[in-house]
Length: 183
Image 1: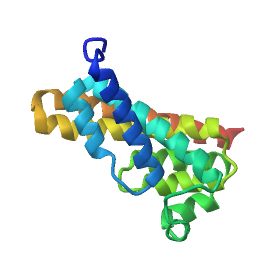
Image 2: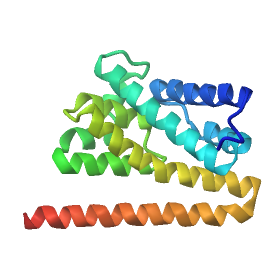
Image 3: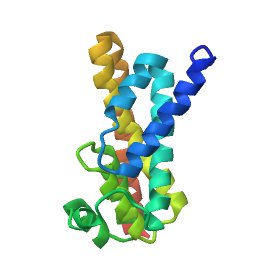
């Protein structure tokens, strides 16, 4: 990682994270192109790492701003969104599970998930952990697409990593649910 983060590369890394935060606060802009730029400029590992940092910080900043009522998103549209309504009706462990699942799938708008979290009773810490855990597999899938475009031989490694993380996530959820039924 040190090879890529010298001189102006550090400024570019901070800029990338900053753009990710702005995209998250806006709530409706796709961040896919930032992941692509990060991987293209910094390489696979550092690019994914920067994207995870940017997406995580963006989610936390958005969460705090939404909770305080400062939002660039259109609340009326968000409050009528089917994903928001599902999250609004959920409680406890189901809410955490849905947050994780909705973060994994790229077709669920991240702004909706973050606004739903801000309107819920979830703590900022729990939101940060679950949101980041859900974004990692999604970012690995984004990286798979980027790498397949740039260099097809490394795409297999990313696909296997994403599949392993999704499998571990699924196993953890199954264990958590079975344990909850028994206790």
